[in-house]
Amino acid sequence: MSKKHFCNLYTTDKEKMNNQHQQLIDNLQIAINWNDIITKTGYTQKAEHVYINVIRDQMIKLGAVVDGINGSQKHIDFIDVKWSNGTVCSYECKKVNKGTTFMFNDTVPMDNVYYMFIYVDKKIIKILKGSDVYQHNHVFINSIRKEFINTVGKHVMKMLSKDDFTNQTIKEFFDISINFMCTCVSHGILSLFDFGQLFKNTKKFGNMTSRPRPNWTIKIPY
Image (cartoon, rainbow, N blue to C red; front, side, top):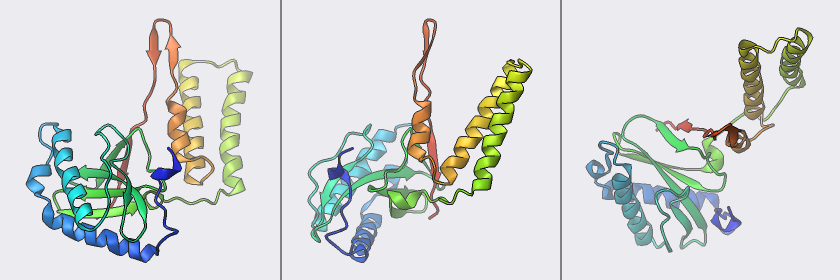
């Protein structure tokens, strides 16, 4: 994605942007007809069309310039919204009828995009920057690194020394390798995006083709 989609905070104070978002949230929580955006019998696009239009209207009322809205299958709903304080931001909207678990399908939050989380049952809206949606510990202690590499290595040596290439040992090797990569993600060695992309590889088996698709969900408290 080009840099023009990112939110540039160099032209304004972060606190001013937070205040702008709070004003938008306050207006939206009044303007939205919450019954109209409840997803019923799987018609997600109908509800999405309603709240997207309300959000656009309220942005404009607050002085923002909204050039366009992406289609429902695009990753970002509002690109390059220009606020009166000089800030240019992009927004993606996520909604749940109930609870705090949001679907991201096969994409992960982008650091410089703002995410608008809509909790229909609570009539609450929350706006977070992508870089604040997923938080992890970036300290990867060497002992942990060696422990997981040793686990992978021992299993490989076991398979090689005993010529133990069975259905079970191969599945165990897959699980051990995945756990190692998950640890690398948790400690900032491998990004969530790159982890997901590893699975999006097309493989052919005779006349059949497989292309797995990661399915991301994120819990965001009220």
